[in-house]
Image (cartoon, rainbow, N blue to C red; front, side):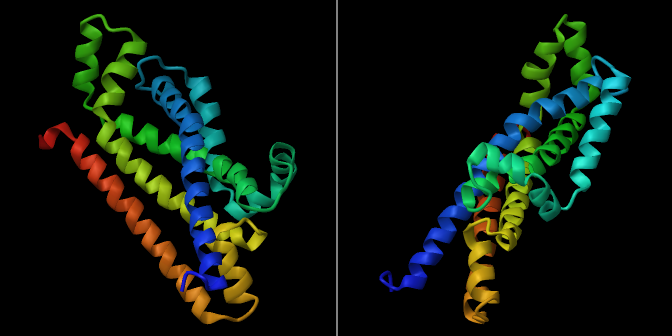
Length: 220
């Protein structure tokens, strides 16, 4: 079984989909988390309202989130080639994945932080906590379970993006589904790739839910 060429192709596809998703999620959170924090801080009810800054960032996030992934992937081809040296393959796909996921992550972070009880923030203010301390010692720790749930959603969303990137030769299970399942009319391969993607989604969701449950202080 393991010597079967198609099995090796599928194993490589699983690995490519996995690391594309994980690396893209990490970079999306590196860029998206600060953006989400700034949106919360600068909002009308934020700890440091900046209406102009908030409006600009809000528009940018809304516009970038509204661009379909495949169109975004095609439009940033020059940037992808500049950074990665190629526009094809799993490594190259990380660039558009990060660009597509960053505004999504920013919204997820913003939503998680806005869920925090205002009374906790006001109490921190009354005790003389700085804005930095309120964000990093009060808001982020309080929002950990929600942030983890959001990260789980982000991972599965990015995995879906990576699969659709197969249309453009993006690597992973999506490319296998297109090259073998669709172009060669091999329905069994198409079905297998779909099942494998579903399994990956379930694994990511289960891990995220377990981590969120452990981190939720309300259940301890």
